[in-house]
Every structure is written in structure tokens, then in C-alpha cells.
Length: 126
Image (tube, rainbow, N blue to C red):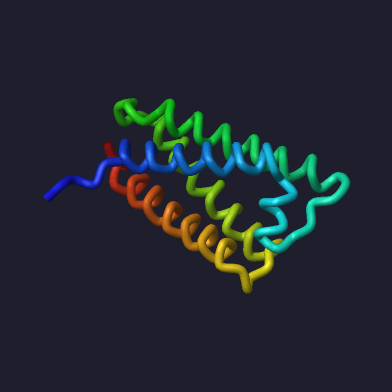
């Protein structure tokens, strides 16, 4: 049976982060409309800032994918757990919960929190 490796989770997550971040940066109004919130005025700037954070997380995840276990990688895993928890809360609070895309994002964020939590706990004592 294949071993569940952090490297593959980071690659998968960075691809999703790049796609989401780039999509929100280019067309924030369409993405906002699909998720059930309006993007008018200053909200466009706010959502583009949020997209740059997502894109930056993708760069971070792609950068640490081949790194050996270290204290700093544990800190990055803790930051990813925090980020995905906050993003799930933001989706619950700000978005239309009758929308499938919103629920997909919430569930994906919760799954990523669990997966990164697993790797954080698994590698904690090493």
C-alpha cells in the first residue's frame, strides 16, 4: 500500500491554491457572484488581497514540498492549519450557505486542516 506523504498533499494543495488565487485575482466579480457575495467598490480590493494570500500560500507549499523534516516545516504546517481554519470560518460567515461551491470550499478546507493536523502530530516528536 502506498504511503501517505506530505509532499503529494503539498503539490495538490499548491495547484488548487494557484488556480483559486489566479482566478480570484483576474475575475473577482464573477467568483464573488458564484459564491453568493457582491464585489463592489472596496470589496474588489479586499478580495484581491485575499487572493494574493492564497497564491502566496501556494508558493510556500510548493517551496517546502521537498524539504526534510525540521522545526520550521512544523511551524509552516501549523500556519497552514490556522489559515485553512480561518478560511473555513470566513466561508461560513460571509458566503451564501445554500451554494454548492461554498460548501465544497468549506469541506475542502476542513479536510486540509485534518490532513495537515495529522502530519503535524505525526512529525511532532522527530
